[in-house]
Image (tube, rainbow, N blue to C red; front, top):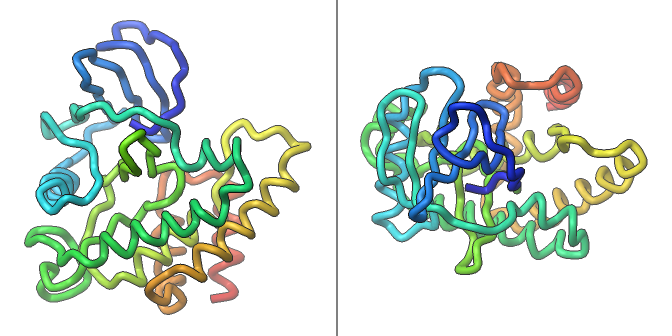
Length: 237
């Protein structure tokens, strides 16, 4: 499901642990299925609505098999590295990956949001569907094409808002376990990726940056260093 394979087995786990995110773990259940288990109870209603609608529309999302309404969601397994992992291994692909990410936004925002998703408009169904966390770590590069994962923030609204949230995440997020000698290189790679992404973007994120910064600051998983960078962005916006 887009997490890096660890090969670990957790005690009392439902299967082999494939990866750990900031708020959920992913396990291999066998038979081509994976379990995404959140660490706290979580209302999946918006995510379920978005996933089923997008799958029906042909947008590249993992097929949802089951959701218990609490912590667990079972998906069809899709293999391959995340765009972030591939970018770190093959930095010369920065421009093509940035264009792919911009194209995924464009394809997503061509779809009107289904009724029921939250959004700022009086009738959220009149907005486009938003991911609100569509960055390289949430794009899985499968053998059959990209797959966009982690729809927990799915909403309705203007396309520029989605691009602004992606921009904030890509500009401030820490890369896990990155050795200090590599940080200047990754900072340069980040800048090149952001320039290429903005050049290919189909909408203007600038009017929505302040709102995206404030929303990101409310994330309980935010690191102190990330919060400092967001506050600096907010001061400039």
